[in-house]
Structure formats: C-alpha cells, structure tokens
View (spheres, rainbow, N blue to C red):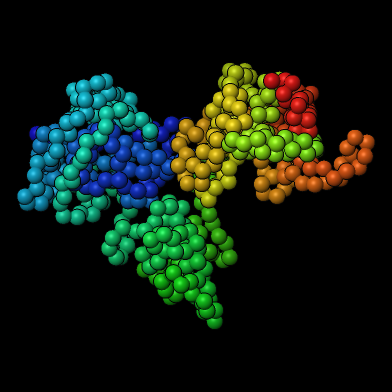
Length: 511
C-alpha cells in the first residue's frame, strides 16, 4: 500500500528564511528517484535546485512559479511504496485524482538506490530536516540540504501521466488542514499552449511585476528566447501607447502588439488588485526590497548599525605594477588579471596585519582572527550586487587567483552561484574602478572587519625620481572596523599595499 509523504522546503542555510519558486522540474504524476532535483528556487543569495529525499510518484505540488515560500512550507507530496501509482487513483492513503486507464504500475522506487549509507533502502528519513512525518515513515535519503544527495546514479525514470489538473486544486485535495496549499496563487493561467521560451528568472520577474503576458512577445534571442531587452521594450511601448497622442511609431520587429487599452500596472481585468512593485501612482515608482536587493539592503543597514567604521586612502603610482603584469603575460601561459595581482598584494598585507582579517563576536565581546584568507570581491550583475568568495586566497598564486576570479565572475553573470560561493568571506576587495570612478568610501561587508577599495588607473601628473612625469595613478581606500584596530594598523596596511603597487619587488621580498 502506498504511503504519501510530504516534502517541505528545507533550511537553505545562512539564515535564509524563504525562497521563490523559479521553475518546477517535475509534474504531478511523475515518478521521481531519491535525491532527484524537483524544483529550482531563488533565494536572496543564489538560485539552487532542491532535491527530494523520497522516491515515488508526485501526487501534489504546492505553489506556482513565482510564489515565495517560507522554510518549512510544503513543496510537494510523494506516494512511496510498491503501489505508489495507485495514489493517483484515490487510494486510501493516496491523493485524490484519477490515473488514466491502461497506465502501468509505478516504477520500483527502491531499484538502483544501492545499499550503502544514506541511500534510503531500509532506513527512514533522518530527523531534523522537517521533510517527512517522522522516522520510519517511508524511504528517503534524508539529504535535503541544497546541493547534497546520495552518490548513487539516478535510474532512468518513466512518467505516469494523468489528465491535467490545476496545481492548486490538487494540492488542496491532498494537503492536510492548515498547510500552505491554501496560499497558492489563484490567478488564471496564461493563454496559449506550450512552454514559455524564457530561462531567466529576472525576465520572468520583470514581466510578472508589470503584469505583462510573456506569451504575447516574440523573443529576439536564439530560437525565439525572450530576453530582458524584449520585455523592457514592450513595457516602454505600452507606456507610450497609454499616453494620449503618443503612439508608438517604430514597433520592435520581434515584439507582438502589446495591449494599449490600459497601463500594464493596472489591467482592466483586475481594477481592485493591489498595486505591484513597479506600478506608478501619482508619479511614484515603488520597487520592493526583496531577493538580492533586499538582502543587500539588510546587510548594509546592519553594517552601518553595528560597525564603527573609518576610512583612510592614498594615491599610488601603479605604473610599475602595470608593467610587471604586461611582462608576465608576454612570457606565455595563462593571462594574469590585474585583480589577481591586487588579491596577491592583499593576502600578503593581511599576513603582516592580521588584525584586519577578523570579525567581532558581540556576544562574547571578543575579536576573532582567522588564519585563512577567504577573499570576497564585489561583482555587479543583472540581479544586483553580489560578493563571491575565493576560498583560501592566501594559498593561491596569481594564475590560480585569475582562474578562480574568472569562474566566479561567470557564475555571477549566469546566476549559477551557490550559497557556498557567497558566504564565509573574511576580507573583501572592491574594484570600483571598473565603473570609471577614482575613489569611494565602501561599506564593510558584515561581519568582516575591513574592505580595500581600488579606483580606476589613469594617467596623471606625478613626481617621479624628482621630476614631473605622466604616470599611471590609482587611488586606494581602506574602510575598517575601528574596534579591531586603530589608525596606525590600518595606515600600515594601506601603506604596504601602496608600496607593493608602486614597487612590485616589495611583494617578492616579503613572500
């Protein structure tokens, strides 16, 4: 007899309390294997795939794409057991529903899972992850933390289909009283058939917040993929059409006609609906502080509240550093980035001034110094500002740092960073010179104790060897937590960094 188990949104770590459903990877009626990813969610830090610790038939899903769920809310229910497929026919322990005639029995959910530890062949789910109904309630690996699962390869799965039933009604039929299923969106499904040619959650969110039907657009990307530019153009076109006497004279060749009867933020079909984040009211535009933007706001506010910071800065002649980089790259082999050379200088400076590679434990009233340097660097992406972390930066050479910076930067742009890539930093390097500015007083990335800022490198008049010359000059700034050190230590750190920039041989002498 099949047993229906409920899988809840697991604790995603690092204090994250909610996540937004970006894309379901399974449908009601699908057969899933143990530790198979079932849903892609977006947190304030990254997008991750959540694996289900049970193997069986999916009987219900909770929440549409775009729904925000708190940790511990039901994600889906799985019918586990030899007769798992009977749950679709409304068995005594199954979900309400009907399996199509002629459908075969469900696949054996224990097949191929192995007998090693954590495979769930005999043991129930481990306690503490909030995903089941108790030990011994059914088969499962217990590995519900994001990115973890058993090492056994997934078996080929076959799908058990049934007539399409709305997710909300299915969830209501199977969820116990008081579950989160009642909070699922009730908005009608988008018109048309077939999957939306959209892969970017940013594009989906932009369209959703402006009540734009993506099925009315024709994407300009490869194979009709809807890009962010397509959505933005459609929004601008609709805004112009909504103004009297301001018709759109040059429609986008790849965008279908957008509705012009009313602004996108206030559709005629829902006049009483609450104003969404981007809706204009009396000349105002409201943007919700959620997702990465909300996480950044919370972290920066906490930094300002808790950290008594101070900033010192100095101009440095970077001509010799630029020449050294040119010579290194001319010697052959992988190219060395300027950021990697600055990172090497940072780690050497932190070895001399370890007070800045630390944090403050307020509860214990202690300064905690770290032996290892996990170097964060600020990266601007379409989703907002993120700070990926290079692990053990002190143990990497310039070539290794260049490769790791490139990997994390690419992952930032594609939204593939994991929570582990964004946490655990001990010091941050902020190269704001890429934005064409000379200086800044950055806010410390809480709970770290310092951040080094690097401005743009530009030709400027400079006294070199007693004569006025044009040199490549950069402004360096250090914002530090005044609780961990005084100005003498901070000044010594920054002066050492400047000396290494001006004379890279100084770095070689101290290694």
